[in-house]
Length: 398
Ligand SMILES: Cc1cc2nc3c(=O)[nH]c(=O)nc-3n(C[C@H](O)[C@H](O)[C@H](O)COP(=O)(O)O)c2cc1C
Ligand code: SF4
Image 1 (cartoon, rainbow, N blue to C red):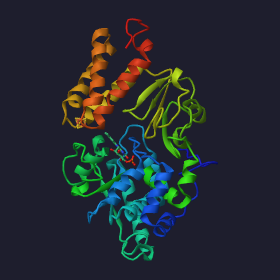
Image 2 (cartoon, rainbow, N blue to C red):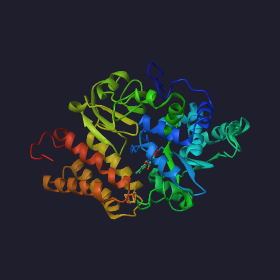
Image 3 (cartoon, rainbow, N blue to C red):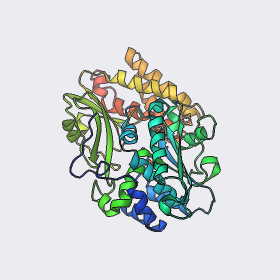
């Protein structure tokens, strides 16, 4: 595991436990929201929604009960940066939750922790207990009369879809983890119908720094549209896999050099549900406005078979589709069948074209982000690796 602590670091820059809470309690809530808006920070969980906008809606609600949820489900294949943050930098994440509670007027925070991370639950609970002892959680936090906030940890059970914010809330409520129709969004009708902020672990960590160091400071990193830095979980064919902090706007080719990747044929940007890029696309940049990602980067060298990689991804989606809506329930099965046909050589270009159309239909007609994004690897791998997959057969122009 590599963590780059270097000049220009944002998330891994200096931070002392409680600093953000102290700074926030000295400010007016409106000023914290303005600072967040200034920073232009967007959600690190994948969708890239502006954090300030989300918080402003909940802060403006007059509801008596509101919630802050930290999405630590981290189910996207190839992602492990949230675990590193929780284990090595819990102060950033939990302080960010307290800041969120203060700013939006919530008194309860919940961490929804990936089922497979059961082994870090106890250390995290011990950490929360130590925060209570220091009055960073509990009643009248740091002497701020009337500000009460506490955090509990709830475990997921291994369903990928439960990382989707509304399925996560259903799961927390004790129901089957299935996505809800949106709207209404959790900011209006969230946990048990109350206004709820759901943020990724890394987003909350970024908030802690922004509250202490300012929106201007944050905006100095990254690009105009993608401010700050990003944690990338880098795996696959490279000498130095691990978690890296890089400014948004970093080129994929720079990243390959940094991690010691050689003879790279493909980069899957954004986990199984992301897009797969070929050599001619390695000068693209990691940014919301170009190759966007929640942080998962998988590197494949020349020895890898692209059809096998795609089959693995599609098997995952068939397994993880919750089955509520037809495009995703049936579509993923059809796409997987198509991959198997390609593998055995029993396909026609006409049928492959129909499957590409099916994929595009799933992207716009599925009920939640799982089915909207699961065709991404199918479409991008067939488009970007068609020479290899179809044996250089020029008959397919997909
Ligand atoms: C199938 C699926 C799985 C998701 N898994 C996660 C996850 O593990 N962690 C996460 O933060 N967001 C995940 N998301 C995105 C969440 O729905 C939501 O956008 C995010 O938690 C909001 O936080 P942010 O604004 O800080 O990014 C997932 C979305 C989908 C569709
Ligand atoms: S898109 Fe897939 S996971 Fe989402 S609701 Fe439909 S069937 Fe369920």
